[in-house]
Length: 169
Figure (cartoon, rainbow, N blue to C red):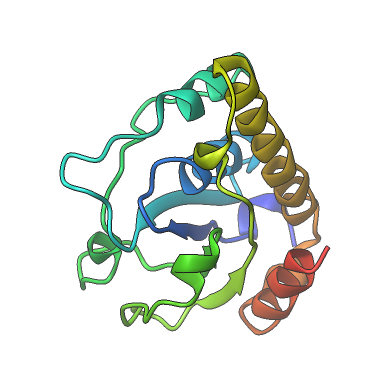
């Protein structure tokens, strides 16, 4: 199967507020996905006028990743009939993992990849920025494993098992 025959996999990253971890994951996967992946992110309960965490955007830019189009949004945007169908939904925070998710059209594979919230890191700005860099690197390491997998590991029947195995690493 050539790259042109491989369907693009839509991946939705979920967190509670959609301001840090899910935003980082969306930006990384869209950057390293090699045209095989299209990433989205959302939150179970973003606050009114929620915006991506400024430190999340800063460490993405430092890493040479685009922040264009990144915004905090509710997962309800992806539960409707007009939403792009997801192939994989990954929760990246423990709170969102325990919440009752909407019905996802198309019955996507699901997995939980837990990361500590860098927004909760104590200390001065440089210490907090270091926490965001650490979370970004941890997310990137796991996503690099995902994008390097052969197409047969990413088929509909194997995707959930594969994503959950990566979550256990």
